[in-house]
Length: 120
Image 1: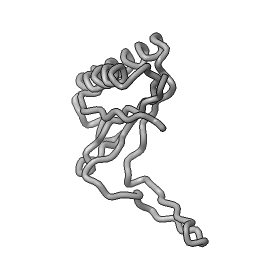
Image 2: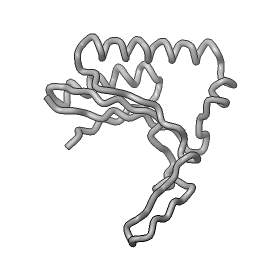
Image 3: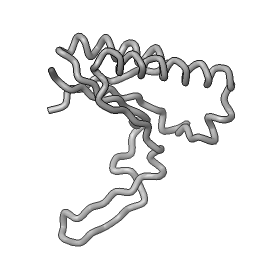
Image 4: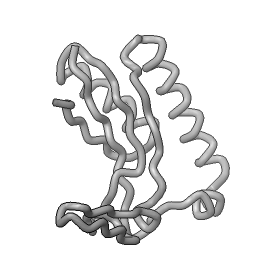
């Protein structure tokens, strides 16, 4: 069995926050939350669930650099990009095809693309 990292991107231009999510259509938001809960339950019941999490947006990131010997803490993300990882799942699957099947289910639940990458 291999572990796979399923990631959900967010657009950096419209960096969603808990506050902005409250401004969205409550019925649509409730439907997505219910779909994600159903997806997470399916992962757990199938035995492929390892863990999952949501990430705060890049504007909250700290980059720590001690490579020169001095510790520098920057109030910024490591990389500026048009999109960023907003949430993720780590699953255990027998092969990439199975991980892709789970990613398709995740994509339907979150109504967003989902990237699949194997962990080393």
